Image (cartoon, rainbow, N blue to C red; front, side, top):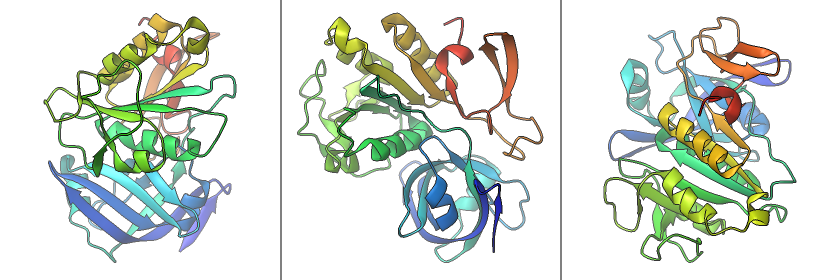
Length: 292
């Protein structure tokens, strides 16, 4: 069954075609949801059922899609009853997928050096955005992604240099290396080959190597826990950079009807309450963290 909402949000019975478990109860779920795959953009998410006995859906950021094959990938952690039940679903099971939902990241031709910062389960939108940027000669993206548990990806040493980062810190995601997109991993856990610190600290090291003219070409894109996003907004302010952040929140309807996922933002006419599901999840960082 497939129905559509204004040809932008689709409800699909999606077959699970892959469900890989990684360390620390991290899962990569792949479903066949061709309508969602065809319309998804970096920063959008889907609202999925976890179990027939659990009526409330869960929002999951979209990590990667294949439009031709019609699949959508999600990364999630086994946290809470809903995702615990989802982790028990098997290949060939069917789940209901409502998506893609939300305002995605917006690229600007005037900022040709996108700086992508992802933390934990905030990494998927950064992978999606990197995928959208690969092969685009107008942009030269750089990623810093951080985790305090083992990264649920194939890792490799990078042959792509990143200015300001010590040569001993060369670990990256293999798929990013395959896409010829420079990236580095950060952690406080002492993982081999990773930068010892936060993504914002690694980003500052790189930014300090740029000329004033080069800094005008940088725009920050970030997703992760709220304290990390606030730190990203401060980094942007310190260096005078535009920044977009993708917020995460518990959701009931995910289509704007219940207003249960609101966030206070600053607008030209004063403060306002915005719904993360449809007014976001991507917002201007300065609107969400005006006092940073």
